[in-house]
Length: 65
Image (cartoon, rainbow, N blue to C red):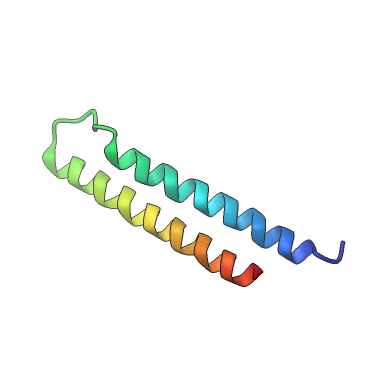
């Protein structure tokens, strides 16, 4: 029970990393719409959320060490 804070940080690390990587993978899956603006918006959102998830993962990794 003394390392409960590290366990919580690790849980956030795994969640953020998983969501970040899955968002980056969604970037490469073709969109099902023909609207070019919607496709660009979806790609931008996937890259942004993927990068944010990876940055949060790295910050949690630094906080644990």
